[in-house]
Length: 228
Image: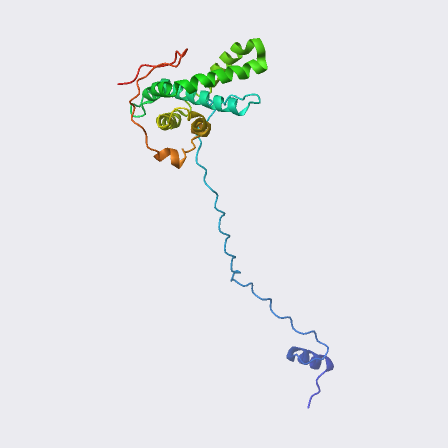
């Protein structure tokens, strides 16, 4: 029997994997998994409130800012603002016969003539208190600025609608009660420049029939011919 050489024997054992000092066979690398991790559900988008677009723009004038007033002067200021707003509506809103802004204004002058005259007197006292001998000039400037503060084409439709409702509402008032009404409604009339709604009370209030003939307040030259 032939003897195998040591080298041949060692080679044979190495091939069979029985050598004690041989390094362990390397495992084949794992294949990358083709499965992807489940995606987290996307967060629900945050709802953004939609704002009502405002009509007010660069052509909308600002309200006249007064110096400190007494309660009676503040009421007179509100009444005079209401008068100015309704007068501007009579001039600018004649495109709609349904609003009757001319008739409203003329009837407003007639129905509330005494309180309008009293408000004019109270405002003159206000300017005399601040400006002394220049009170008439200050009152004229105040008048011009107040009327201009309601003159705009930037929000004409909303302003005219508000003036139509408010003008009719003023005619339902008993004489002598215009002050509280004006203080509540003048802010609404100005809010119409910014496309804000009328109060629910004003929007549904009953309107008195226009049976008062149009006349002028003493010294007033702003009355207009009634629309047919």
